[in-house]
Image (tube, rainbow over all chains, first blue to last red; front, side, top):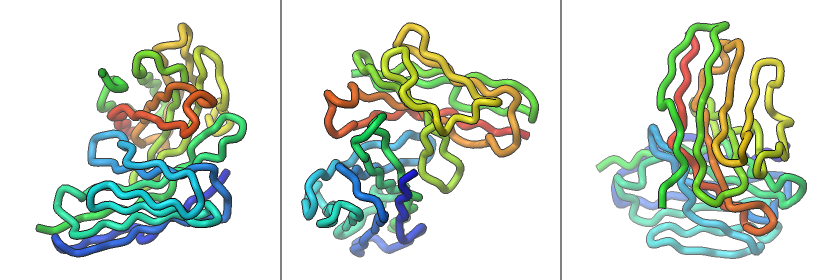
Length: 112
Length: 117
């Protein structure tokens, strides 16, 4: 089982601040996805990164896949209360059943 | 487009009782997944179906958990008998099909929150 460790586990910041969430593993993944999950709902896909070193932007969110495809980061600029939620990274190894291995999660709270 | 449907949304049972969850995936999605998400953790895959066949059930506690997808569409997940440590959210997800959907993008239902007393 591939393990994905996320840090920090919890993050509470003021509206307007910037933050970075990290997702690290000793395993290589063919692709990595970031999801956001709100209370009482299932995770919703934000982005998929495939190429080592790839950077993708989604409005105020910037996602980067590590050069070795073992780690990833999510940077949020000028956080807003609507960004509050559980952020999950998930890696795909593209072998066998092509399953996703989810990280431990980062719970973000943005205070107005 | 309708999303992944799950029912019930909440279930409270006593230990040693049985419980079943139902999932209806997005129309046309061949692959269906059941995950267990314990509070404060990321989802853990229990079983993956492609059409009506099991692709991976290596993480499914087969002494008490069972799942089926008889007609390749809807699926049920059953726990019998339940233990206290089974308290979790059970998520169902679907994807078009690994191999054809290179990035294996999965779409999740809202989950069933199970509390075992």
